[in-house]
Length: 71
Image 1 (tube, rainbow, N blue to C red):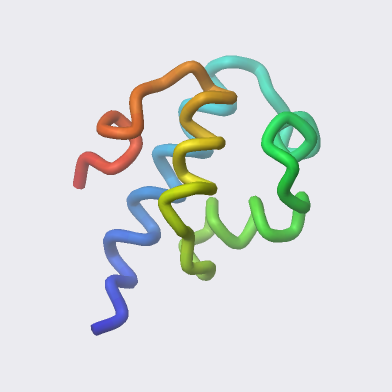
Image 2 (image 1 turned 60 degrees about the horizontal axis):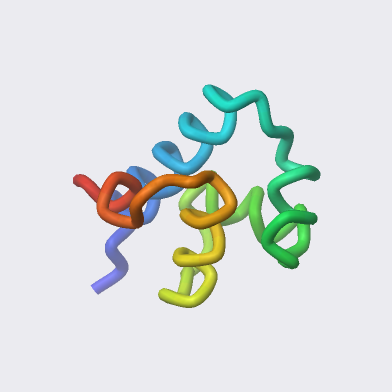
């Protein structure tokens, strides 16, 4: 099972929250300690994402994880 739809939805939500807050991909990558290219893959739904990274992103965006994973 590939979960393509869910990964794209998650990535879109992360990108939407990030842009609403005026944070660039580069800034969020620095805030979370992940590479910008990996963050881009997450936002486009082409990368698998572990719970630890998801929590780091949610904390950096000051957003509950549940708001990012609503499908």
